[in-house]
Image (tube, rainbow, N blue to C red; front, side, top):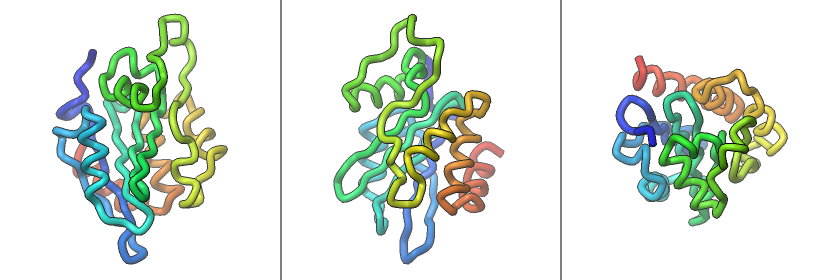
Length: 163
């Protein structure tokens, strides 16, 4: 399996406090450990829960959202589980099988497509973002940040991480 630590992955933490979006970066040590990601997100404040948006090598992304104790997960591409441990952990948490060799022709998401319904991004719009097979994970995450209303701070955080 490929290693998703270090410069291959980054996790941006997002929550709303006093009607303002707050963004930060989670430590590299949690980027490839789903339980550590969940624990880190769970510790954050937030009016509607907090979430992490994890970009792994621009190949796929994971959203980890904790709302009132409930963990909600979204994996942008199940086929990532063939090469990446974090994707395997997400599928295991969702009680889904890792795709076999016959299932690698198509890219499809797994998990909660309605993870941001309460923030105005419904399943259909999420599906449209995820169905762009030409978009890299960072581009999809930028589209999500733009649609959810925190594009500028998101781009600043990401630029500082990868710049």
